[in-house]
Figure 1: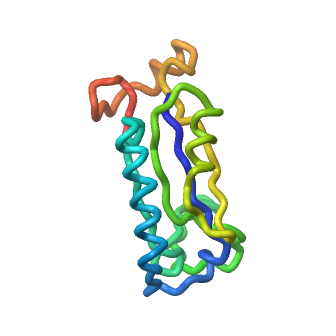
Figure 2: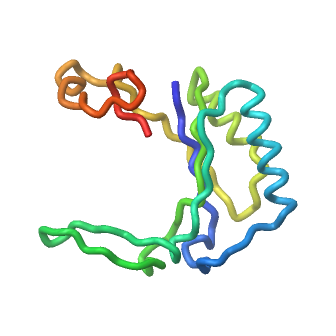
Figure 3: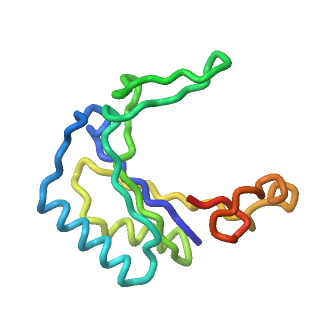
Length: 139
């Protein structure tokens, strides 16, 4: 099973676009990432720039509306993510618990939807873009 570990740092929603990271924190995070790679479970890991450096596209009112960040109504912002492949939700949560996160950070653990999770009708409707030969679109 694949899981996404979503890093949600408190305060990131108001961070400036030129945010830099403490070197020691990055070194600890890279060691954690390497431990997952060494265990053979890490599929992807990426950090995200703060919302102040992004845009949001909403669709209220019948059409797209593009808004520059930061987003005043945001209470949380995604700071980055990992995609891991492990046997269970419990295993994914155990890996998340090993992260050298700061006190202001939360990791949400979410299972990634796979084709076999759905009925044959939904699988047929979802087929199309096939990036890796699985029949399911994966980024």
